[in-house]
Length: 216
Image (cartoon, rainbow, N blue to C red; front, side, top):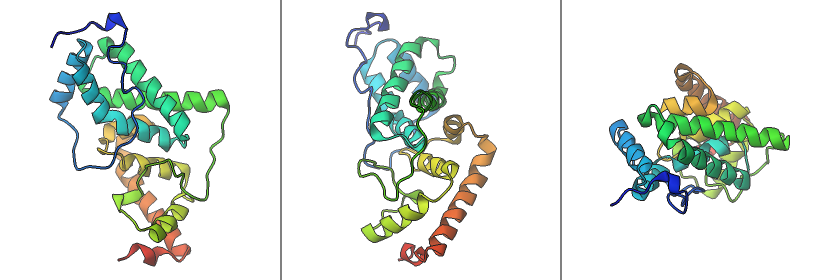
């Protein structure tokens, strides 16, 4: 395949700038060496390499936007802007293997920009938005009754707990480095914070008398 310079800026590598979340799978994250190769190939104009990067990190970028409680329209704008920034900066990446962390940081900044520009305050609904494909904590596929009970308790958690649990359920699950960049949280605090968030969720379920619904 012949390389197409990015400077052409026509239709090259402009597809999939608004990737939407896909069904969960068992695939994992590619090794750092392979990610660095994809960045190098995409930099040279390889459309398939670009598409592979979008497939690898699209779910994570979307989860960052959802973790900031943006609605689907704004989350799509964040996704598009984040991938456009990567397209513009492929040639300047100093550590191609860490493109995931770069994307997470960029997505977080785009989220904050949208929230700041629109002066939007976070809004918490009493039910899940139907257009969202976020999975509940721990990746359990729940029946309708259990799903509703879990979501009611999940939305009562502090925003930082919700944001962390959402990112931990992205597919493939981002490494801690990317979660740290997305939430501006020290890597060492992610594990303990996750445990505390899940414990608060368990207590909330218990206080609502719905903990038994989580048990088969």
